[in-house]
Length: 242
Length: 79
Image (cartoon, rainbow over all chains, first blue to last red; front, side, top):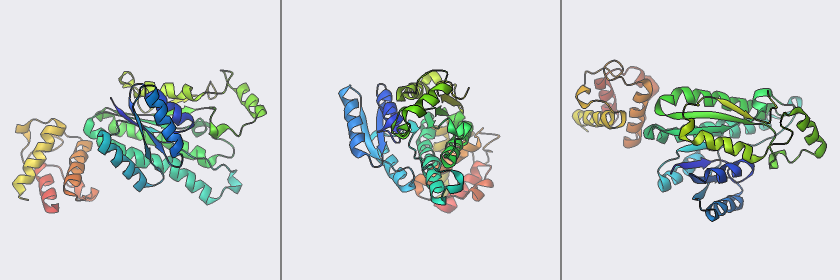
């Protein structure tokens, strides 16, 4: 059984990834502030017969990342599959964006995934097997009003993922990006019904996405069957970016 | 640690981790041409040493290493 670390694994898309992957892997649910929620996910997985644990990991801090990996490696040997899912938003239009809003989002979303990925590949290289999956966003491909910091961080993940795929492909480590469109989570709960109608109009599949739409693709990319897919960006967005 | 011990350790890593034929690992062997170790393989060996002996090797120092002997000497000077 492979060990998976899902950063931000207690809520939204991350929670769905945790529960879906727990059907065939040992899942470590990463959390920062939502320890109770992480424990709920761990219990939910245990009740359905899976194996899971939780770990505190603040990806914006290298020390926290190192500590979390050391904890996981002590318990399970290595992180075989890394899901870089944790992320934050601090939306503002560019003329009003504060330097702090820019730096915080880049530090967590982009630099945080650099910390986790760099740490994870140490063991993956030794094992000569690994999977790294980045949860980016369609806004990293298309940009978005009021999200220049978030879009830049999500676009940055694409460059990081593609470079990893080239550096480490010879060690059976694949690195791919999933770019979700509009998915029903806490992060998109600010959308009112009218916003949602407007969004649905732009989609080919006439509904807002569910977290499972993402986690099912993540599960596929974790399998051996997908070993020939690497360095790719897979939009899962109901046809938004076609 | 004696030079010879460092050599044996390096050889061990090459044979076990990188799957290289033991008889090919001599002090004179060229890493890329003779042993077909790619740059990532060299990094793997260096990282293994950094972990085991709690040393740090600069990228600059690594740039001059092209033979097993040079790697052994560099590591020996650090331990």
